[in-house]
Length: 147
Ligand SMILES: [Zn+2]
Picture 1 (cartoon, rainbow, N blue to C red):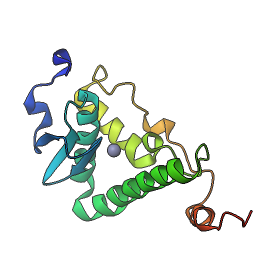
Picture 2 (picture 1 turned 60 degrees about the vertical axis):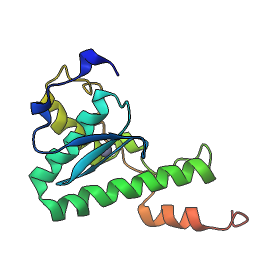
Picture 3 (picture 1 turned 180 degrees about the vertical axis):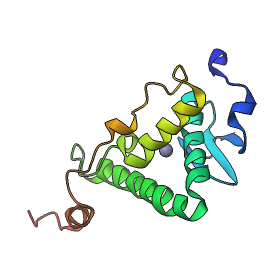
Picture 4 (picture 1 turned 45 degrees about the horizontal axis):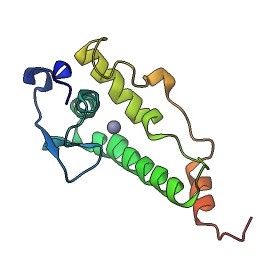
């Protein structure tokens, strides 16, 4: 871990960030905790903290409904596409999903423009899927010989 990027704990006020070898990447589970992979870069912690800021802004119900589920679903789609359709992208790359770029902007506002995640995509760089969700599900589920 790059020591010079470590931030004082008060900047992560309100939630504990736990490093664990049980996961890859990170996940925010407010109000309980944020989990990140062991040795994660400060930028990932700041990003996950951005999800905590979304949670504080939206409340639990809207956070898990409008941020948590869409984010999880996007992760599943990205993994699915990687595994089954190498090279084909129907869904948005995870880091450009609306809820992810929004978390980045909130974190940038909190940690400052020189923060570790300063170069992560902003809300204005949000991308849309090239296919609607119901079209994507149809494309994922179609038999290989279909077309
Ligand atoms: Zn995220």
